[in-house]
Structure formats: structure tokens, C-alpha cells
Image 1 (cartoon, rainbow, N blue to C red):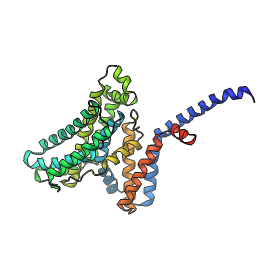
Image 2 (image 1 turned 60 degrees about the vertical axis):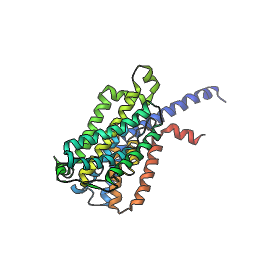
Image 3 (image 1 turned 45 degrees about the vertical axis):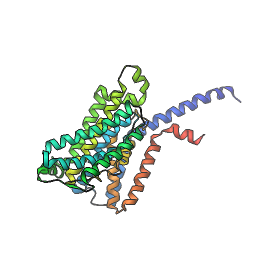
Image 4 (image 1 turned 180 degrees about the vertical axis):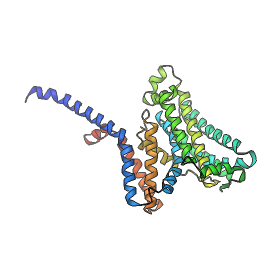
Amino acid sequence: MNPSAVTSDPRERRSGIASLKHGWQAARKFNTVAILVVLIVAASFISDDFFSVANLSNISRQVAGVGIMSVGMLLVVLTGGIDLSVGSVAALGSVLSALLIPEHGLAFALAATLVTGGLCGLVSGVLVAFCRLTPFVVTLAMMTVARGIAMIVSNGSPVLVDDAGQALLDFGRHSYLGIPGPTLVMLIVFVLGGIALGRMRAGRVVRAIGSNEEAVRLSGVPVARHVLGTYVCSGVLAAMAGIISTSRASVGAPTVGVGDELTVIAAVVIGGASLAGGKGGVLNTLMGVLILGVIGNIMNLASVPGYHQQVVMGAIIVAAVLMQQGPNFWRRWLFR
């Protein structure tokens, strides 16, 4: 056997693995856009109505709430955490906004609802960041508590928005410069999220915490405060999504957001965020939201039953997580 061939093999293997990693990373950078384009093309063949103004407007309205919550979820996931309470906090926000408008007016109702969402996030954040409890358990508990409070204050029934909230209802139904009101709010949230993560020191710290929390702590950065801030933001944005739901449906319903936490997590993961923290971006998260919105719309146009749609969404989440693992996962699995 040629000794030189033996000694060169490890280097060649390392080079091949490095090339595979670079190729995988490049593919992941563009795969969300490619998937979205493929889905849009497929949808155009499935239904001639897909590109109608009414249908496109409907898609953008439907994904607005999930999109708003996905920005908050992205912040939490970047730190290596997770927030399972977003759907329930959205329900609480929906009910509170409808209940407070008649007695206190629109401005107070909206402000109080957002503050309540922030308080939900504050409680979760304190338990995770300062008490060092597991994010999954903490936010699962908050999910139950927030949903329970929404049921209690509404007596388990939808709360109709009266004339005092007409401005909110008009905003949910009208378009501005051709963009539906809920969609406009979602886009503003994404822009602000992009600025926070890309241009502000706090955003860079959040990303660094997910990559190497101990190194960030040793550098003198108050890690707990930044982690707490991500949960507060997630709570505020979840409550905002609840307000958007109220503006679209004209009622505050305690059943709003059931299962939305999984959809939001799916959007973030499809967008390339790592559930281990440190990786993820706002633009790709938006692509993930749109991908789920288009898939849901395609299934509706194809008259796929609702329960079947849940199976499809579950399969998409699993596929997205597997795609996220990268070549090292597959190499370990194939050659273990």
C-alpha cells in the first residue's frame, strides 16, 4: 500500500466534508426563496384564482398574526429558548382588547393589552433568565395560564367589539396603499426586527447568547437581562397579534391562536433558525411565514380537509428540523 495515499486520505476527507458544509450553507441561504417560488408556481397550476387580488390579499391577512408572533419567537429562539405561550397570549390579547374598548376607549384598550402581553413575557422571562428554569416548561405553564385567564374574563364566549372600536375594525378590513392593514403592521414589525438584530447592539448580543452564552457572560454583558427582553418582546408581539385578530373578526375570542405556537415555531425553523440558538434571520423568517401561508392556501384551494392539513403541517415541521441539522447530522446517522 502506498503510504502517501494513506496519509493524504484524512486531509481529503476533511476537505470533502468542508466543501459539503459550505455547499449546504449556501443552499440553506437560498432554499426558502426557492421553495416559495416553487410553491407559487405550483399554486398557479392548481387554481386560476391564486393570483387574484382577493386571494393574495386574503393570504397576507391570514399570515399577519403568525408573522408578527414569529418575530418575537425568533428573538427567543436566537437565545436558545422557546416560547410556547404565544398562541394563548394572543387569545388573551384578543379578549382584553374587545372587553376594554367599551369602557376605556380604543387607545387605552390597545395600550393595556400590549402591556398585559409584555407582563406575560416578563413572568416567563424572569423564570427562565433569573431562576434558570427550562423555557419549555415555563412557557408551557404560561400557555395554560394565559388561555385560562382568557376563558375566565370572557366567560368562555366571544366578546363583540362595539361601535367604540370601529376604527380598529376599519383598520383590520381596509387597505392602505394597496396593503391590508394587518399586513402593514406585520411588515413594520419585520422591519423593526431586522433593524434590531442587524443594527443594534442588543440584537447582536441576543444572537451571541445563543452561540456561546458563557463567553458573552464572561465578557461582562448582562445575559439574563437580554434573555428577559426577548420574552417580553415575544409577549408584546403575541398580544399585538391578538389585537389584529380582533380587528379582522370583529370579536375577541378566547379560542384565538390555538395551535399557533407550533405554526410560529415552524415558520421560524423553516426560515433557517436553529432551535439550539445563535442562528436565524428576520428575512428568512418572513419567507418561512409566507411558505406556510401559501401551503395553507393551496390546501384550501384544493379542498383538503382541515385535519389532513394538520398532518401536512406536522410533516413540514419535521422536514424543516431535519433540513436544519446540516451534513454533520446525516454523516453521523449514516455512519454510526
